[in-house]
Structure formats: structure tokens, C-alpha cells
Length: 222
Length: 151
Image (tube, rainbow over all chains, first blue to last red; front, side, top):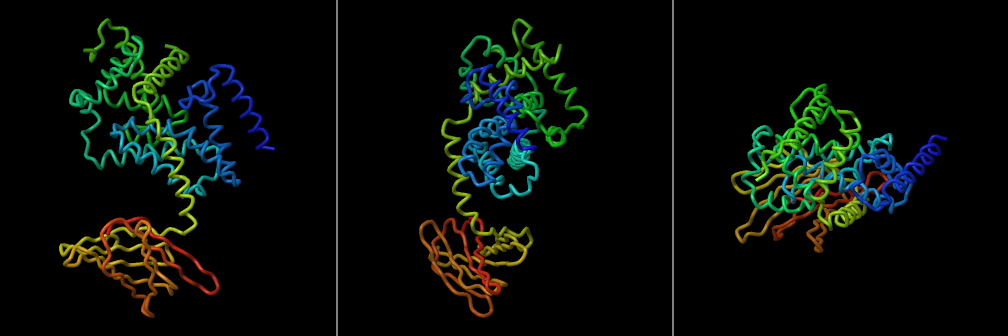
């Protein structure tokens, strides 16, 4: 009964997704498809637990890009970020029995990845998040690679504005951009802020980003 | 600003990050392979490293003591470096075990513990290793494996 309803929802959401962007193979699904992603993840997870081993491959395809961005939001270098993504997947295989409701699998994955990224990042004794805004200046290779990666003038402007944000805003915005159902409690503890302030902080960060975009020469654009 | 405007800006951010810092092209395939390999090894119940003080103690004498357990079976490994740079592994297990296997890459060495639960591997090359053991409780045979650790 319940599974039937979920499957029907799944099909209608996927169909909508196809009609909207016509790119079902796009791994980085947009917010419009956010509902589709966690519902699809749940469906694949159920199929895997019912014995369909290929379903796990599809789940990995669906969620790995999301986990990548969530982990990179924590400032880990690429090799470490890959390790954290792998740890997250292995942990899912090992402890899938602890996930009673398959609809929670997407949130379980992103939360596990964020906790692990936070732990690894701390282990590396990185500078405090608030001081890290200046860190970009010390990473010329990385930032220049990313600077030139933005293909359009619009994206270059947006990237310059994002880089002018403080580390906390940048991290928060990147996590919420990719995690369609972020767990506010762990997010709050990672960012060292009260749970209730995540929503307002998100608003403040978006407002700041708009201001930077509207100013003729965003700070940080060189 | 409306919620719609916010959603639109967040969507632009998502597109931006996907463009400037995409996941490595081979990452998905490597994750699929890692998960598949994990599925194979999970046919063995996993022993986990017991936290300090007995978990992993590397003493000044360059000896390493590791304790793994799954709550029922515990295994203690005492690793020493010999004069020629090889390793000697002295082990104790608290359950009657039929055999203990030291796995290093493709190499496997098998031994049977004594009545006291003691066993040893000598002249072991340094490197990553796992220890697998088969125990028998009544008629039931269980195979347990440690995670990979460095000798």
C-alpha cells in the first residue's frame, strides 16, 4: 500500500523532472528535482536491500556528486574529500541495518559525510572557520584553477562574490545547495551556532551575496 | 526577497559549484568498485579495534599491541620488529579457534592456535595486513576478520 504510493510518487516526480530539464542523466540534480533525489535514493536503497545489487550502483551514481560537494564545503583538499566520500559509502554498506526508514537514506548519507568531513578537517588542525576567509589568498593554484573554471561572465561574477563571503556563509550555502534535506542539528554544531539561527543565517548569507553581486566591483574580484 | 528568488539564487550556486569544483570524473566508478569490494568482504563478521588503552599501543621499544573484538571474540596482537626489519606477530585469542590466517595482499599464512589460544607468525614483511580467524562454537563455524592494519 505504502510502497505502491511511494512508487507512484516516484514515477510522477521522475516524469516531471524529465519534462522540466530533459536531462535525467545529470548527476548534479537541481532543487527542482530535490524531492526526486531523496525519493529515488529511498527507492534504490529498498531495491538493494531486497537483493538487487545493481541498485546500489545507481544509488552511488545518484548520491556521490552530492556527497562530494557537501564534503568539499568543509574545505578538505581533494584527496581527503575522496576518502571521506568512500568512508561514507562503506559505512552505509556496513551499517545499513541501522536505517529503519529507507526514506532517511539520503539524509543519512549527507549527514554521515558532513560529520566525517568535520572530524577529518578538525584532525588536520585547520584554521578556525572565521579566519579561513583569508586562506584563499594563500592558495593561488587552487583558486586560479577554480577561477578560470567558471565559463560564463555571469558565473565568474557569482564566483567572485562567493569568494568574498566569509567561510561560514560559503560552507552553509554550499551544503544547502546540494543537500536537499540538511539536518539542521548537526549543521548547527559543525558551524558552531545555535540550531535556531541556521535559517536566519542562511537568509543573511544570501542577502550578503546579493549585495556583493549588485556592487559594481565585488570584493575579491581581482 | 521572496522564497522563489532565494531558490533561484541557490540553484545558480549549485550550478556554479558543479562547474568550478566538480567531483573527479572517475570518482563514481571508484566508489562503485569500493562498495562492491566491501560487499564481498562483509561476508566475514568484522572485528573492530578496541579503543585505548589496549587498543593500539605503540611502545617506545617499537612494539605494537592491537586488540580487536566483536563483543564475543577478542584477539590480541603483539607486533615486534626484529633485527632484520621484519615483524614478529604474537597473538592470543580468547575463543577456541580452528585456524588463524594472516593476509597480506595475495599472501596468506595459516596457523593453528595452541590450547592456550596462543599463536605466532614470525619473519613477516612489514606492510598492510588483516587477520582472519575461524572459530567454532558448538556446530556453528564463524569466520571473523580484522580491518586492515599496518604491521
